[in-house]
Length: 116
Image 1 (cartoon, rainbow, N blue to C red):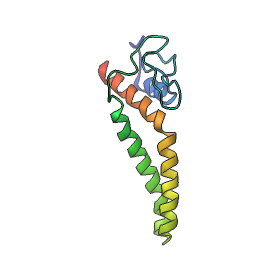
Image 2 (tube, one colour):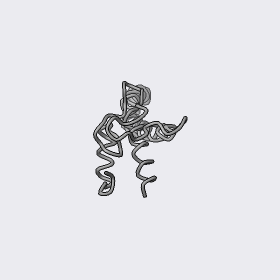
Image 3 (tube, rainbow, N blue to C red):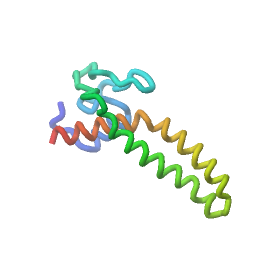
């Protein structure tokens, strides 16, 4: 099932919040709940406690870049207060909105590394 899997296909599965092994089943049960196993191929979506700690780094990196990119134009225009407010609002929205994607990407990356 994973023999001809390319990194591009794996990335697509991760961005669509699908199982990295088969791509047929969603890995989330709700907003934050991760399934124990894939319903289609029985891939373990929760390998160990603390597994998703690496996803925090992905989420933080994306959030920091987007938040700073939002605040920078305001800061350069001497509107620092407005830049801090806009950057904070956008960063908060990105952190919440990217939560599932970062977890799915982390699961996909570790799956890719484990199969090589």
